[in-house]
Length: 109
Length: 114
Image 1 (cartoon, each protein chain N blue to C red):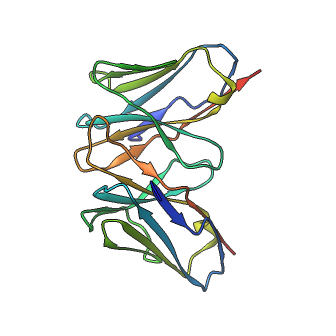
Image 2 (image 1 turned 90 degrees about the vertical axis):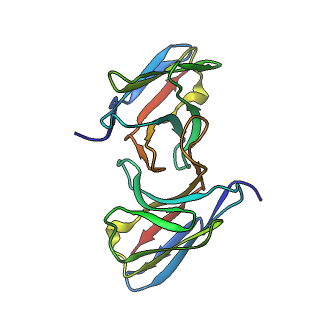
């Protein structure tokens, strides 16, 4: 089993749609969780950290379920500029971060 | 300059060449990383340095040799590479683990081995 797995994608959605990505992780000792976004031929950039209680940043909502070992990212009212690959990242105590393979999102006009 | 800076942005090298990739971070972070991103594959961790000590080496071939002379600089020395080593090489830095942590990436070096 891979350490971090994500929805295979790609997701093609119309502007204004709500889209959700899921990510599962295998290491139950994982301590930190993030969503990164990577535009084509660019470096990954931190989108948001994921906290135990769940957190929201504008149109983006992240949830963590430790019991089931998954995190999710919900994007509401999607914009064309949201088109990118979304990477789930899980970290342990040792400053080791494991990246998921990413889920590509295309928001269509 | 701010953030994480990588040079060069693009590199084409023959299989017998020796070259080095450079990374510099201006964030005061205490850990630096080299990642490899090949087409259609997840990011692969290559090396981790924490407080200038190498703490992780994920079975990377010896033709890749990292160097961390201080907490702000990281190098990746390359020699006798293979065409399958062509990829985007990303440097990142971080300050600890936990909420609010995470990586700051450089823009990467796109390496082509011919």
